[in-house]
Image (tube, rainbow, N blue to C red; front, side, top):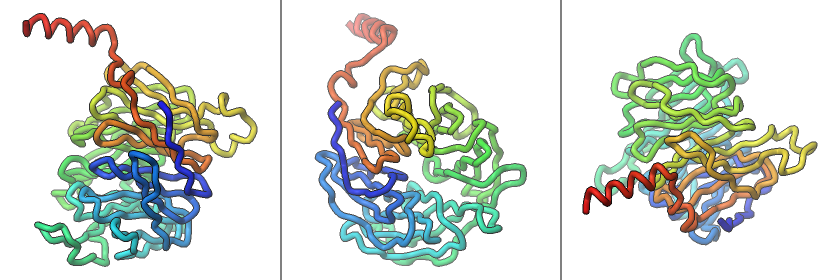
Length: 346
C-alpha cells in the first residue's frame, strides 16, 4: 500500500476522523488548527482556525454539515463544514479531551478533564435541528445532561454512542468501561474492569452493536454493548493509542508505539511505530504497515471499507488505500468454507 502523506500540521496529530461517506478526512493536532482533506487524493479542502490551544478531539455529524472540536483552550466549537466558519462555542471550566456527535446529529458529547479541582465529567450538549433539512435552528447553551464520574471509577478519557444513541459508553483512566442509558436520564447501567492502564481509544463497529478499545497496557478488546462482555482480545508488543474495526473485511487495525517521551532514544524500527492488522475472528496478527517515525496516536478506517488513515506524533497524516491483495486475503479455513458453499449451491 502506497500511502498519501498529508503535510499540514506542525505538531503531533491528536485525532483523525472520516465522514460517513468516507470522502473527507478530518484531522486535528496540538498546533490549534484542524484540517479537512479529500480522502481520494489527499488534497486539503481547508482549515478550521479559531482555537487558542491544542485541539484534542474532532468529529463530524452524519450529514457532513457540522464539525465539532474539543480543545485545551477550555472550549467546544462547532463549525460549518461547507465554509469552515465557527457557528457556536460552548465554554468549559477545564480543557475538553474528547468530543463526539450522537448518531442522530442532535447532541454532542464532550469529556471535561479532571484538573484544577474539577472532578471530570461527560457533558451532553443539544443542537436543535430541522427534522427535514437538518439545518441548525438553535444551539442550547447549557448542557442537557452532565454525567459525573461514578463512584469507584477514575475520570473519563474517551466515550462514544451506541446504535441510535441509546447508550453512552465511557472509557476511564483506570482502564474500566462504564455504560449509561440515554433513554433513562443517563442513568448508570454498570461497568467492566477491562484494561490495566488508561483507555486510550474507543471506536464502534459499523452497526454500533459492539466496540473496540485500546490501552497503554498493550491490549485491545472487542466488547459487546448490550451485555458489556468481552468478545475478542488482541495482544500487541507495544503500548496502544488507537484501534478501529474495518468494514467489508474481518480485520481490526491497532496503532501505537513506544511512549512519545522515549522516542528520541530509539530507532523507528525499535519504536514499533506501525499500524498492525489483526484478524477480527481469529485474533492473529496478519500484517503491519510501516511509515511513521513517531508513535501512532490515532487510526481511523473509511466507513466504505476502502482505506484507512493514521496520524502520529511526527505530525503527519497518512492515508492508505487498500489494494487487491487486502480484499483477496483469506485464511485456509475461510477458503474451505467458501468452496463448500459453492458445492452446496451447485
